[in-house]
Length: 373
Ligand SMILES: [Zn+2]
Image 1: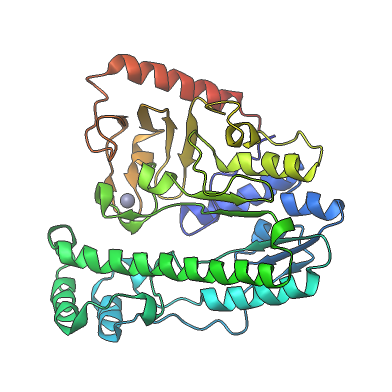
Image 2: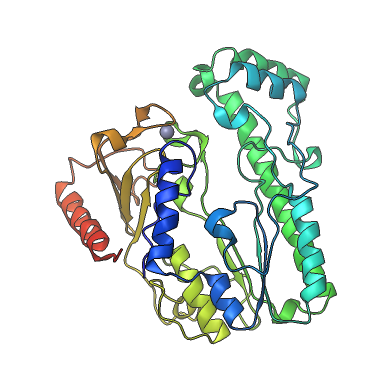
């Protein structure tokens, strides 16, 4: 079953579409994972602040925590300079009220302690690896006073972002520190499960809804674009009896997670389009899917199909090709990349390989046409 949601309901187009999409979810009558688990006797808990449909089906939904405080950047001078001078880079202009990872962990630990002797489902949303990247200073490899001065000079001319690689390095260093921070916090959660004696009967799934373009494709510390830097995200599953430290090859998409959970939890439900990843884990098959598909509708209106060897991206309209954030077209109306030769997706070969383009375009169209909503 497909719900047809194309946007999370952010600003501009997203706000408008978000309102429409919320109704659409209700109209198609889809039940969400927490709603289904609740009907199976699980206590459903979430530490998340996104609200809207994200809060459906939970017995407890945190919302914005009382203790959340505005994020400030580790280098205060850079923070204020960014706010004043770098108006184009909205994400860095103003500190935002976001729950800090250690607050999320703290509340998660309290909930786990409270419900550890019952069947519970807990959704935990860490935001720290999202812009603005503001890790605690002990996870941040400080660039020092000289580096900070360089940054201040660079900000006076935002167009220097592309040319001045050191500035990109500053944000990449922050992003890395944020990942270190969340990794540390997840470790604390795992330790807590172990202390309570329930680690070996707890199923843990760790994933992300997007990566980040750290200057790749002219996208600066954002995650629009259908390139692998944004699409290729981690998924780690820990479950009693599963092989440890085993890396699985083969395509998996987020819509495969719920069918996987249902198989492990012995829940019968065929409403979901994805496939359980168990055959991949047990090496019964090499691939679940011959390709993955993705679509975006917030800043650009584009679709993609990615096979093991190629990626094809196309804009649905000329207007949809122009990035609303960057005010330019990333990559063109149509793009084709040979991922074996060019894994960073830098050389558009849509014209040279018209046969591959035609095949992938047909496959993508058929897949979209088959969706029911
Ligand atoms: Zn853009």
